[in-house]
Length: 347
Image (cartoon, rainbow, N blue to C red; front, side, top):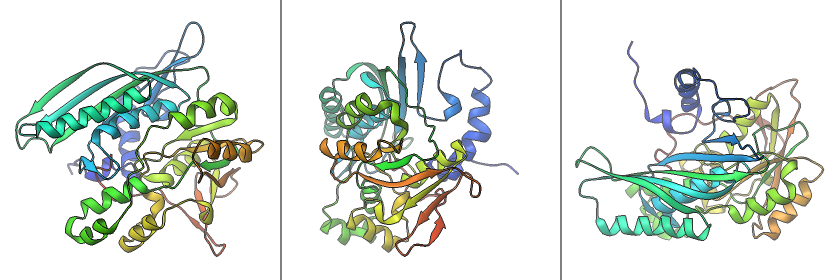
């Protein structure tokens, strides 16, 4: 029977990982990268290329389709700039240059386009990232829903952060999770959530994380064994990927995970675990236990005052590749990776 691409294939959950592993990665793996290159085998948004004089060139690319393209706390332009900057940072790199590609639908308001491009420029400028070039295209009316932006960010790293959590590591989260996903969810529900949306003060957390990651990597880089920003699929997806790749079990303390009360309320009403909702201004770190408390204190001193140790990586005898969540009452349950179309077009 003929199969087709589904919306869930782009959700960041189980269906997307299966599509990548069964279709995309095997095709592109026909060409093997040179020795020392880091890329496709880690199924990340970025690649690291070793430089002759030492260190690495880090390059990340991502496409942004968020709907609505204006939302409390930002817009698709802010998201496109910050998101790709963060992808380079999570590999241990310092972003320095960018390319962008913008595709809009015929009839797209020019005033909106100007605001979006201005927002991108402001984010890149504030982070010292120079836009070196790009591309712009227009699709006929009805063949594209508004606007899509692709960004490529280039940076340099002295030491890479390659996602390889080790048994004993502590899982550190830099701040409340799920803010961005909750905001977009409210808007996508339309009339159903109009009253909640009108009363809500919740904003997307979208922002570049340079002020967190650059000093953190400089001081504690060799102790950070994995780093990620929990976008599509949220914290649950990041931890499930780490557990699967490392063959470990990750135990998370539910009470230690910072979540805003509004996010918990909206997620509860809709029957969605907030750990599946995207964040766009949060870092998740797997840190050597010898420095975990110091890392949290340092992260808080950088302005991320709700940073917390939320769990640990354990050597797996049972539940290899699983994430276990210890509830408020002390019981354990499996925190599965997300499935289906929780919040399409989240980023």
